[in-house]
Image (cartoon, rainbow, N blue to C red):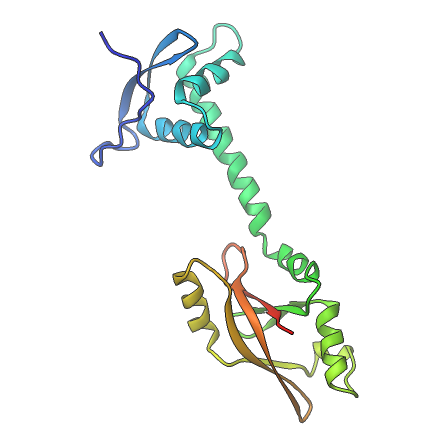
Length: 205
């Protein structure tokens, strides 16, 4: 007789589409369920996030099912809906339009650069930082005449950040306005933006 098990077969040869039979138990209730391997993987990941065993998770899911529901179909729909919800949440966090909010939320001077050196966003503290150092500087030229350059190539910096788990890296930078130059030091990290690499730069005092 099959014994209850909360372990999903992780054999490399198991294809995502391969049907896998498992017996799971929750509160003394045992269920034999046949699902594709990929659904067992999703259930395991959800169970780990909720610090539950798969049997307890399956029991909680099926407790919400209407009467005469096809168990495996209900579990598949649950897995798909959960995956779509997680994808939507990730897209909301990684939406490039939210990068400006990360910059504006910083109390320190901050700006965001694309790898093409385009200034994507900056905050009021950064404008104040420039004004305090360029006695004749104005805020308006930031959109027109301000030039920013890092001491390291942005592509190289991005590669180093990816290699070290995106822990902030220190880099020198230069601000140019007209014929004047200002040097400083900043902490850089990659923004959580989907589809493109954007550098978040936080000026150090």
